[in-house]
Image (cartoon, rainbow, N blue to C red; front, side):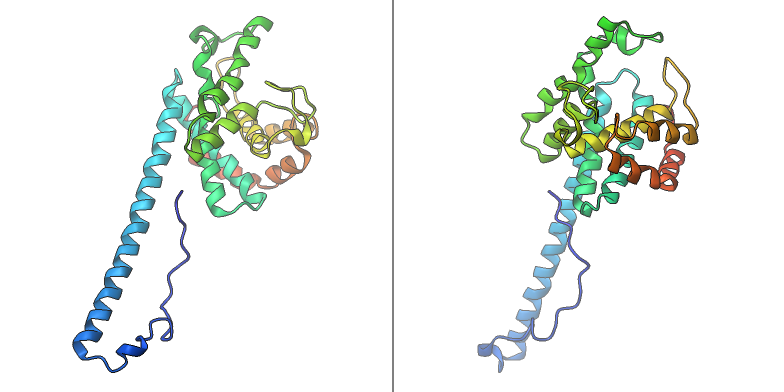
Length: 253
């Protein structure tokens, strides 16, 4: 995991005090100490940069993996970026640390990886699904959890948790396990809100997007029904940030 370091400050004179045995060191010895200190600072900086580079590559890989299983990559890319940003906004409202907000933002992009098990004709169907077809579509939640949960990567494991719980409902009428209120993992409750908001405000094959104001009212009506009451209140209070994300990633999907 990326090590987010605090802003570097100049060390105090005491922290870099010459050891007792070197207090009367020659200029060449003092120069050696300074040279070693400089090398150490440089090595630590390079380590931070290399870890940051690895984290960026990991985030890009997760995004590409999530897009790979979809039939409409252009639409999917917009949905993944928006949905993951909405998750991040809500995580900040919950006062998660910066590291956890970033980790969840990346991991949440894997929430629909299980859709790989859904036949293409159902994913691309324009009309209403039959009860049997809807039952098949619902299998993607558990499938996503199975695919991801066994991985050793922390970000992928979190993605598996979200995949398996983001369709649960506060009232227990969701899937795949029918969990209710706080039985549902917190990250699943967060992702459910973010996913629903983007679904409502985006065009779908079977309907057009609704205005943000309409989506807000529709989601408010589901407070304590589909969504965690406390979380939905926090989410809707962040409407200016939600609208900014919608504007920044206004592509299809």
